Image (tube, rainbow, N blue to C red):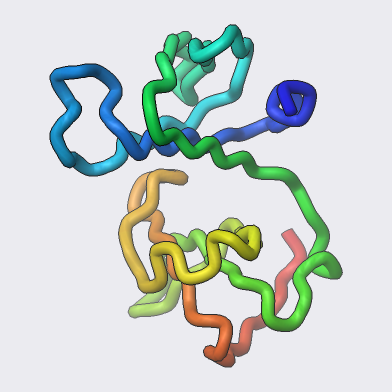
Length: 139
């Protein structure tokens, strides 16, 4: 498991419980987008996008999610996907990432909301029964 985590280039760490006793009341999860540098027991050392080294003590109910590069062929019919996008002309969005979520996350966060990938980015996830079309462009 640690070998898998260290191989992940980008990681989104979602702490679904408090980071400290003071935060033990029900609050929104804390998201940290970083690269895992080291795991020692319940202490996670990560490097944030701005270069800062952070030490995160994992307490209680924690979920660690990773991103790995896949090809378009890896997206199968019925996959639960989300698209990170940025606004372009008018009310159009341009996808900058497509996420294929594991089956146990199906239905998580369905809808359209702000996202932390880059300024003004959004994430849209849709129920698997939704049909949509897209134009693929090489970049």
